[in-house]
Length: 631
Image 1 (spheres, helix red, strand yellow):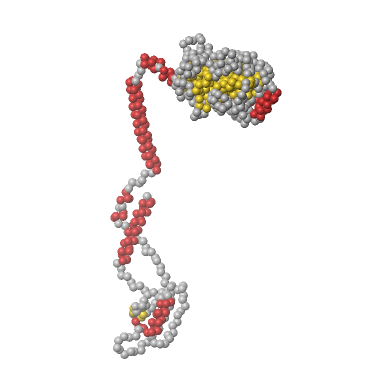
Image 2: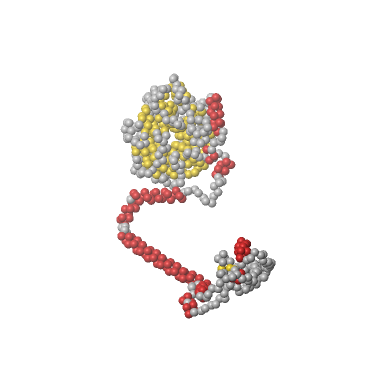
């Protein structure tokens, strides 16, 4: 209100000022008083003009001193003023008379000039306020006052509440319409009891439930406690305090598929380290089940297998494809090679035909060789046939090689029970046979010999069928890839040094093992090097014993010898990629998983000690006859 009032008063003052100026404009303007010369040049001009007009005598002019404090205005006589046109006005009485009259001598007036300072005072006129009808009755004088802040807030709050009520009403209306549509759809798509039964009995529904429950079980079996301090490994600390121990983690068994069956082979996945594959023979008590079964076990799904694959014949060996993570391979008793896909059904997606172009005898061993872009599956059967396969097509082998040896008494063919390739080798391999000998063989002919078995080099040391053969992995600063281990039913494990391929023999030679680990109480069915520790290997026997050896610690007794399960025979052994866990296949259909703890971690000088141990074996002549008593 005060601002509005000020505006009105300002307008009134402006209007009064305009009226006063108009009134002053109508009055006559008085002549402006002559200003005294202020500049020196104008004063000189005036003196020159007076000198011309007056007689030539010097008038005595007294110029008083300037008194600045005297503010009075000087008075001049009322003498007519004449404008000279030069900017100065001269009194008329000092000019000479004009006209033809006789000149007369008049008294002369000598003016006195003084300087003074003009003071201009600007005194504002007294303000006179005039009122009229228009000013007194302004339209703004009767306007309603603006609303207060509280009134504005209340108005905004009411508007917001109305908007919210409108939104809630719209949402409630939408929910009511959706519920009505759902009820209508339920009435339209309601299934009958017969249709429900058909859906529950369908294969798609069964697969969906199986897949979903597996995922839930894997999540529930995750061994993770968010309240536990995982920076301190209690199990490792206990193992260090108590010495070298192995710890049983769990056992895979399924009453539906593994009961009354033997585990014929075990292996780990190269891509997914939590997956383990096991092959089984036929169940003699249930003729309706498939003869061969391959089960994929998951470390996070212990109660049942992740996948179940079927075969028409006993599966004797199995493995994951190194270059195809979802592919599982198997060799059967009938000689067929099968390929299953974890993305497909339980039946094999590819298999070799039952013909003479492939295997016709049991296949006990297989191995993948090559690289990602060029690899082959090598298989060997007991009829001495070695085949090379391309996984894209298994209709017929890309290569076949028949192993024969002239030193056999009855037949020339060699019955292969196991074989192995050295690391990064794709041509030369060694085979273990039923008669106990080990032979070197070549897939292709070369300058030093033909394709097939090397007839001159015989690795003799076992007195029974060779059950396992494994080359040392190429992992470490020292190359031990020419060392390999063999196990046999003669209760021994033997260490061999493979002869160089570049130096073939030209005459018959018998090669003896570097060392023989003897003293077991039963058949030794398998032996495997550790993938991380160069001096560590494990073996399993027919009495259920799992032995772990470290050549740098002791060559006479194993560092660990433990009984697995209920004492049933152990058929196969396989280390995982990290060398910490070992999967052991048993003759009662169970797959036992053990943790070897710190045994898998090599020391810095492990390779140097291994070299020293091997040199001592060679120099001391420790051959067959040196025994190791297992207690």
